[in-house]
Image 1 (tube, rainbow, N blue to C red):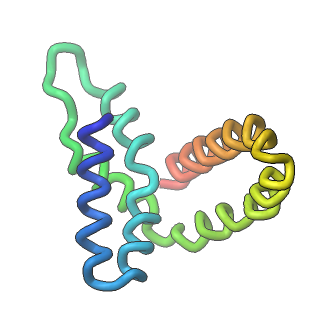
Image 2 (image 1 turned 180 degrees about the vertical axis):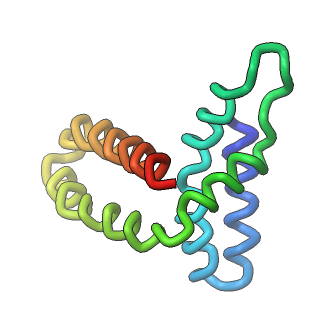
Length: 115
């Protein structure tokens, strides 16, 4: 996972060198990389080589084609909860973070069903 994090971060950084907006767009395009890698890893038969990081990034980019705005709006929907969590001195994060990760995992499952 560390290698995947580094690979994804380098790609987003290189896109951000152009301007900030392309970096943000690519961050959304690559947002499903970890889920895609998990699925690629689960589909790999035992004894074969692990899938390449590039394959997971490519699959994430394919899944997010036409869905970046939808994910952006989904992230905006958590803004009120984040502000409310700050008012509770961060205690609300104990419930909010697992909820957000659960919603994002469900979003990935819905993307898989669409594609």
